[in-house]
Image 1: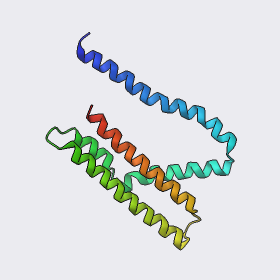
Image 2: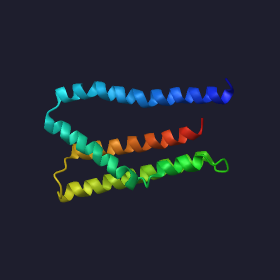
Image 3: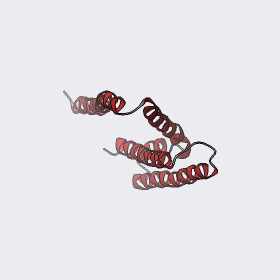
Length: 140
């Protein structure tokens, strides 16, 4: 077997494990979470997570995809690209917190301060995770 086939096989195994493990953890955690939370609490948590998923590409300007695309270019400085991606994510996090606090202060929606904290933290970690993931996809 030549080195390209070994490399391909190794990558298939790594990606399979990387895709399978989170799904297994989800299958294990769902019954535990639903046992200890009410329908209302579970629904609110799910709504907040979906909200983060919807606003993430809008606020971060989908910078994670740009990091992936430009980090592949050998003529570009990948560290600068990654830094720019993280900078945009941090700026969008500040904008998100300000927007959520404004919604909280004008009481337009029934939004609690703990929801604002949850959305902010979840958005920040997910955005940075995808930034790292896309950057590291390219720089093996």
